[in-house]
Amino acid sequence: MIKLPALCEYLDGFLQIKAFRDIAQNGLQVEGAEEVRHIAVAVDARQQTFQQAAACGAQLLICHHGLFWGRSELLCGTHYQRIKTLIHNDLGLYAAHLPLDAHLEVGNNAVLARALQLQDLEPWGDYKGQTIGIRGHLPRAIKTTTFVDRVAQTLRPFDGFAKLFGQGKPSIREIAILTGDAAMDIHQAAQDGIDLLLTGETNHVAAVMAHELPTYLLCGGHYATEVWGVRALADHLKARFDLHTTFLHLPTQV
Image (cartoon, rainbow, N blue to C red):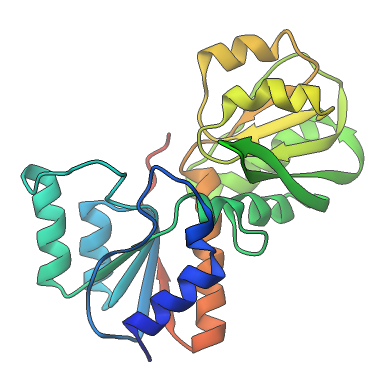
């Protein structure tokens, strides 16, 4: 068990919350129980997630996509119902958007890269002057179709997919990963000599570009490419503070 302020202070430092310029309001978004014994984690802050977190007995929910995105939100409709559910169940909400993309230990990009057996990982991918992605290489060049199959198998448990665009090399080795919605970074990947860029959402303009560049664009689903950070963070917190943790799987198939 740990006090909520102490846990949030640790998370803010570990994830370097204040180091990122983000449209998301990172950090504690809604206060909950003063003492935390059980943490639930999920990709998205949504009504079903809140209900499941409360049902499993969590005192804090950590999400990659939180409720507040730097704009005024009226407490009406679905937004009111979500806040009501959190407060009624004394359930806190903590959000980590870009900080949980960029983190080299528990970040979406780094954890997915290790799951895909990439080596010599290093930060890559600029977002408003901040490096939030990762690049690395395979132990040896392999057929593009083999790597696409590997991605499909890795993402399938999370309702992901592997949609390939482009006409690059038949064998690849240099890979970059920017999870979520980063298909338009295909041009930068090509400039940096990357064979394949893996992201989440498909994008019509980027798909067209991929057919004119030497770099493949591989899309696996926004949700499926971003389950990695919250799950790794849950494992980290469980080991460090001996807390019970639960991953809530509510895929969007997007």
